[in-house]
Length: 174
Length: 331
Image 1 (tube, helix red, strand yellow):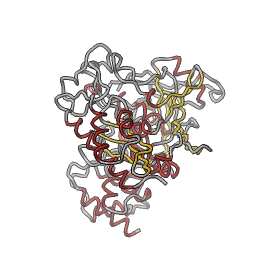
Image 2 (cartoon, rainbow over the protein chains, first blue to last red):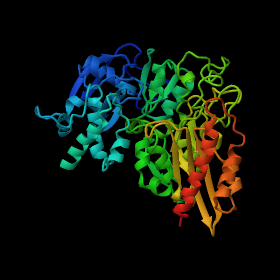
Image 3 (cartoon, rainbow over the protein chains, first blue to last red):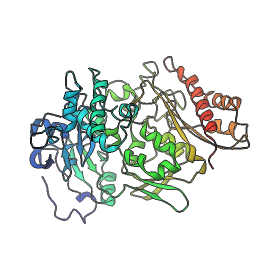
Image 4 (cartoon, rainbow over the protein chains, first blue to last red):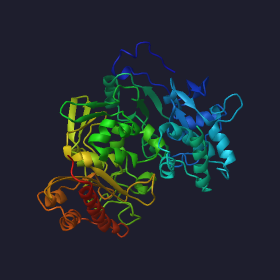
């Protein structure tokens, strides 16, 4: 990793260039700081799964169409497959592993179990990260809203009715 | 995915200088197009300059009633802005009918305008494609072209511009402000997008390294009751087969002002000037609406698989005008 002490004031070609070989990157994930050595091309999804052993976020399509890799960056749901890990330096990443508190599942995780909201389970971490985000975004007042605002998470088992039931259960409880 | 190097820009001038000086360096904003197509080997930058920290996000309310939307404002942020929703509902609707909530949290307004086409032959990095590799031919014209354009096409390319936002902006005479090595520029939205003609690889007039800074939406009272209709193969999270951005103002049953732009049918976001010409001053009835729609689509050049769009677009135009008429004119 090259370094330049005055990149803030310099203009033009002095802009610090990192890579293409491995560089040291600090990621804050679920409240803990991690140092990883990765190439700049590494996606947040691969960094989480392959380097930090956080395999909750799933690689479905790897091209931004399925939502299985949904995580939060600074509290907003995004797709980890289309996010470069390096762009997350100085930002806070939250994965499905970060939802439970003191060994107790998040109410949405519990509701997915109670409402049988998955079959194969591959899309479930992404569904849950989207569903919890949607609670805060406030578009899930009726089933049409839930359908529209959960449309970025595909479920090939078509567990959608039960996913909506799990969402409603938490929405109406909280 | 090919190796890349990475720089994080801390000031716009520095970023512009670096990218302008190096054809192998691209900007990285939301990344929803750039990283996708980098992984598919369709885009092949050597380096990315991350501009997400530049102070180009936010929406300003100008005294004349226009809005200035910062290029790094995310789609989701622009869509919830009360200023946008009140003055230009067609923009908020177009934004919220595009992509998915996750992608809308990532994708920037400036990047949305520069997103690349969804033509599968362009995206596969292998097929002949004049947009990706000038001179190799167009695989879509005699290929699978269900999603492709019928207006503004050429014998070299028939890919549809995929942005919903750009269709709304086309209806509203938006202006795209940029900053480059030669200073600041402003482009009318209709001049910002190019039809393919003989150079389908040129989609806009920007120089390499010229950075979109702001989208300006001029004041338009007619837009307060504007709307966006999007017709697609599934109900959500899908690109348009046909879309219509519209606004209508009536005085005593006569059309005093009208805005119409089409998505899903044009090689660029398609301002329906000819339809507007038929409608202005005409009586606001179904006959006028159908006549305007027919006029706009009379030059359509469909392929085997997308001929349905010619009729579908006319019906969508008429439906938008009927809906706007029923909703009443802006006060």
